[in-house]
Length: 532
Image 1: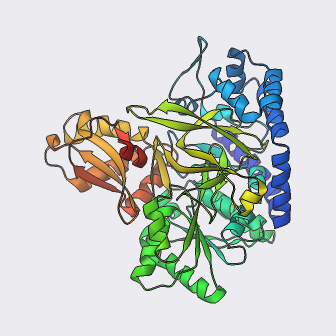
Image 2 (image 1 turned 180 degrees about the horizontal axis):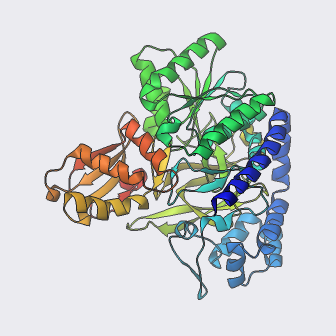
Image 3 (image 1 turned 90 degrees about the vertical axis):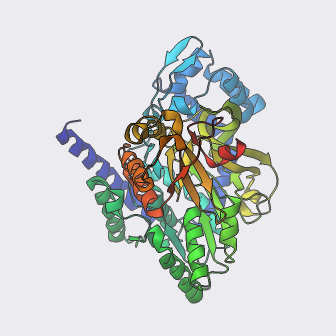
C-alpha cells in the first residue's frame, strides 16, 4: 500500500476509534445487567447461530465456509432444519462428517484445502467478520505462524465485558483492588483488559507490563495507539491505568504491591500469566511478604498442577481464563473446580465439538477442539474451525454464578498440540522447524535430526524450552546457541521481537546435550512430551 494511502487508512481507523472509545468508556454495566444479557443470549442461542450463518456465510460469498458448504451440497435450509430438530452441536457434527470444517493448518494457510475433489487456499484474514469496523489491529501474545492478527473491536469487547463482573464474583474479588501484569501493544490482552474492566466499574488500578516498548520493539503506530487510548480516555473522564514496566526478573515489585494493597484494602486481585504468578509467589516467600488470601486470575498459558501448587503455597487462590485470538473468550474458571485448569465454557457465544486428529510429524492422536462462533460481534466468523488445542469436555453442575446461569459444560486438561508457551507468550512450534533443520546445522554442524525442542516444566512450576543438541554435533557454546535461536525468532513477522524479548528476560531457553527422542516430532509441547 502506498505510504499516503496507509496514512489515510490509519487516520480513518483512529477516527473510528475516537468515536467508539468515547461511547464505550461512558457506559458502565452492572452485575444484574450482566446476568440478564448472558441469560438472553443463552435463550436465543439457536436463533443467534442461524442468523450469523445466514448473514455471515450464505450472504457472504467470500467466506471460506460458503465454499465448503457448497461442495457439501448444504443449503441454509438444511442447517436450519438440523438445528431445529437436533440442536447446534449435533448439526455441527453432521457438517464435520460432510467435510465442512477447517483444520488448524488450513486456517493458517500452511495447507491446501481439499474437499470433494475441489481445492482451496485460505488465509486467516478470509475468516474476518466483514460487518465489524476496523479500529485497530493487534497480535496474539506471541508469534503464531505469521502472527494471529485480530481486530481490536470495541463492540466485541463490549459483548465480552459482561463476563468480567461474574469473573470477579466467582473469585470473591468484586470489592478489592485489581492489578494487571500483562504486556503492552502489539499484544492486545493488556489494553483490552484495562478497557473492559473500566466498563464494569471495577477498573484496573495498576498495570504492570513485563516488557517495555523498547523490548517489545513496538512500532510507532503501537506506541501512539497506547497513548491515544490512555490519554484520550482520561480526557473523557476515564482514568485508565497507565502501563508501568516491571520485568519478569522484578517480580518482587508486584508481590510488594499485592502485600501493601492487601494490608491497606483488606485484599487484592491480580491478573497475569501462570508463570508470572509463580515468580511473584516465590518472590513473596523469599522476602517474607504476606499475600495470603489474595486472588490471582491467570491466562496466556496452561495452569498446570505444579504451577497451581506453587501459587497456593502462599495462601493465594487461583483460577484460569481460557481464550484465543481467533474466537476470543472461551471460558473462565471458578473456585469450585474439580480439575486444576477447569473452566466453564461460554456456550452463549461459542459452540465446541471435538474430533480426533493426528499430530503433525508425530505418531500421537488428540481430541482437538472445533470452534463455532455464535454472536455477530465476534472478530472472525468460524464454523467448525479447528483450534490447535485439545482437552477433556464434560457436563456437570456447579454452584457458582456461572453454573447458576447454565454454563454446565466444563473443559479441563487443556493443552496445545502445536504451540509452545513460556511466561504467557506463545509461538507456533513450526516456526522452530526452520531453525532446527537449517539454521543450527549450518552454524554448528550435524544434521537436521541432531536437534529437537521440548517444552518442559520444573518442579517449581516454571516452564522451560529445552533445545536438545545431539552429542554427535560436538562441542558448542550453549549461550551462543540460545542467542542464535532468539535472533532467529526476532525475524518472525509481527510479534517475533516481543516473544524473543520476553523469553530472553525470563531465561526460558536452555540447551540439553542428549540424543533427540526419535519417536517424537521436531517440536514437542509439554503434554505431548508426557504422552510420548
